Length: 177
Image (cartoon, rainbow, N blue to C red; front, side, top):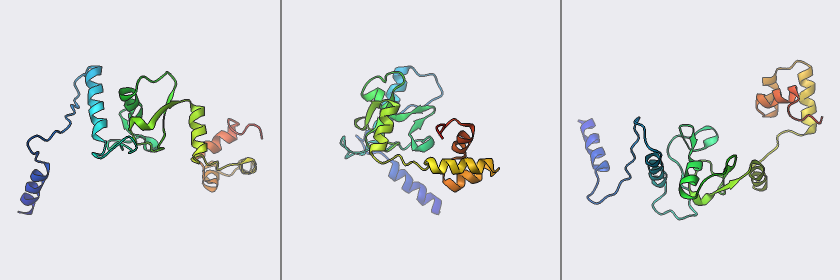
């Protein structure tokens, strides 16, 4: 009895009124033309836009996210797709950066083309880059490595990833010390 009531409520909530427009996105395993794929992506991205949105509001992708919270669809990053669909082509090797600093945002007004160097400068200017290590700490890490302390323990102590400690050990980073 209770399940039937819930089903009826769901039907009422999902029932469309006459004249309601719902974006129709065709996701199928059939091979799509690039134009069909782009139109599906465009529709999906616009569906993320709040109804009251202007160019200042973030359009947060409600689909899958990849590492570090970036919106993704398969191997594609959605902010790159959004830029390509709504703004224009992306130069080879260029990054698509966010003015809003929200990785899941797909609002084309918040995106701009930049290089890795420009992206790092932007991050430093906005206070997003926090260096956890300095010359003294790297020297201490090298002493610990020489003493045979495990990389995992050193990484945990300094609040860094063990890959960074390994790179210090192999001389790939902080070579000048």
